[in-house]
Image (cartoon, rainbow, N blue to C red):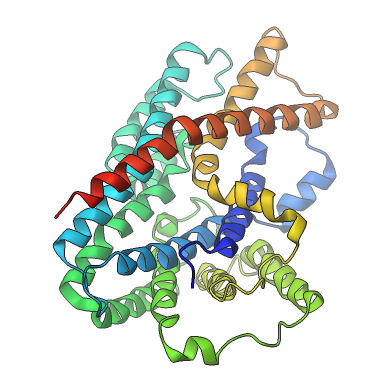
Length: 374
């Protein structure tokens, strides 16, 4: 198995596209949307992209941690843990903190339309974001009437950072056998928590079950059963596309179909697990279209930047549109394609700039720094 799994990048691309669809109304905050848009968002939910990200993270990060371990028996040392934390810190913190600062600056200097919310609201969230406990505070803030939209995506980054902090500690204390048992307990404990949609219930920010599934999958691929359970029935492209379509449909429609069921989000995590399991074989089972490979790899490799940047980018477009309209917000849905094109264009430019000038250089620096730890 190679260090880079292109099919995992494909799944990251799927996850970020779903997230963009989920947040598209931020780019088009106009009254009286066309009936077809209302129909789509009434019958489909795209927030399952985050659960797909969680399973991917649990899987990839556990593999990375074990692959970088000093020992050959699947255990890690304090040196391994410190190296892991340094790599994660330089991978995630700079971009996240930069865009928190960018939103606060936009609040202060480029927010005549109110697109970025209020400085008070965003400042009240910034502390919890920087401490990576925002997933526990976003719901109380939302319930208190705080507009969490400009920085709302940081709740999932908090979940992941807590996981990255705890995973090495748990491996050091429990070894992998104890960790597996704890992951099963975590999945069972959250299975019937009602988490039907963003911020309807306070349990929304408690999503360690999807990460736990990823950890268990990372263990599973090292066992003989991974080979014996190989999905050999996916021998032809038509069958592969049927399965891919079914899994994407499950991610999109299951949250709506099981909205009133307590286990709905837990079952969604299992659908995402199946998709990542297929990717673990690296046999072209995920989105088997060769001519889409460059686009999917580009989206996958920049999915973190897209995730962090897309909401501020959409709000920037709304602010610019407000100025073009001389202070009058647009209500003309015939202009929606132009607004979407502008939003996507600005987003992609900002993503590429941040990826090349901020994300990649600091990621490489963190990797080199981690190698000096002993």
